[in-house]
Image (cartoon, rainbow, N blue to C red; front, side, top):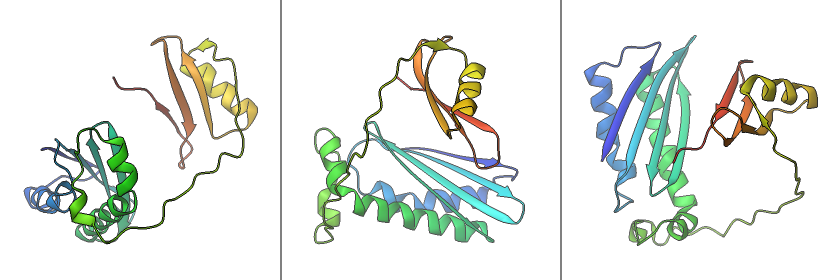
Length: 174
């Protein structure tokens, strides 16, 4: 179990770190294989935000919760992660290799299988461009995201517009 607790606009005190690490068992108990937990605790204006990312066997689960109290936000985000694991347990079990998922912990709490309907398939020619050009292209077509071939890394990337007006980029990790 690898756990990383970071802070943004907040000092992560030993008490906060211990509180996160105390709650990690709520989510890691569902998995047999190595789980990496990353917690980002941040403050934006009056909001205390707890963001938890779990990585296990190539599957990434993420939850974000905000509250006026950081400890309450941490409680909420871990509860949210447990609900996600229960909701997606059959999909997770299928995607994970070698029985990494402890299915017996959520037996009897099955939900109907969710069906994803593809409404449209769009194909495009991914030509090499840098990040700035991709952002310009995204803005020209009026979308919130843009998929492109990054000329610097020679990988498929996604640029997107974040809620606060800045931009983000998604790069593959191998």
